[in-house]
Image (cartoon, rainbow, N blue to C red; front, side, top):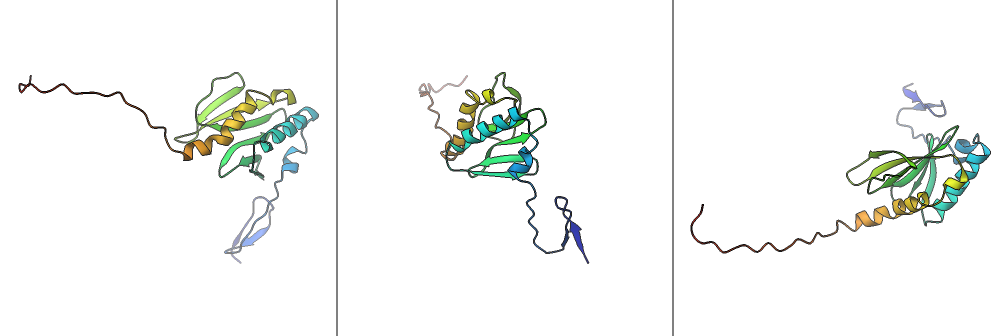
Length: 159
């Protein structure tokens, strides 16, 4: 019998058979967090949900927040929450550990959060900016206004 073993649930799946195991959940990813990290996670989630309509789901080892596309995600670690926020510009701030260009129009910003009190401005401002980024990208590039370059009339002789 041809098939494969699902690496998540270890169940045998026959070739051509649909398989959708969702063994990863938000609760499973946050179950072993310390009290400080759990408080930080809850505040981060509340802040994101207040931004507006979106989908929150677990995928592998991350919890994703997306509208049409993912605008940020959280990877719960033992000592911190690794937050990756997608913005249209690179940031230089003490909270940002690393910036990676993730596409032609986006930069991924890696932030480590260890306590509930860290989930405030400017991080909340960046989350809002990331949430609104798809709207700005869909609007298209802003027209650049050029200065008029009036040409001088030709005199007939070329140098």
